[in-house]
Structures are given as C-alpha cells and as structure tokens.
Image (cartoon, rainbow, N blue to C red; front, side, top):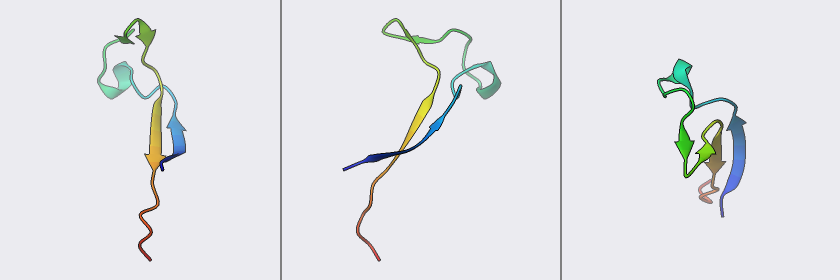
Length: 42
C-alpha cells in the first residue's frame, strides 16, 4: 500500500497560487500529503 512520506505545511495558499481561504466541502485546504509506494524494483 501507500505510506505517508511527508507533509507540506501551508501548501495551498496565495504564495503558491491558490486563493486565500480555499475550502473543500467546508474544510480549509491547507497542507499537502505526499505518499510513496514501494514498487519492489531493485
């Protein structure tokens, strides 16, 4: 499966080209979660 690799805090705001106060289903969109998945290729 996937694992969380890192969290990018405040990724979705005016400094990255998104409008201030962006909401998704009434929830503020702030941080980005980066996932990784081991594909088993050596």
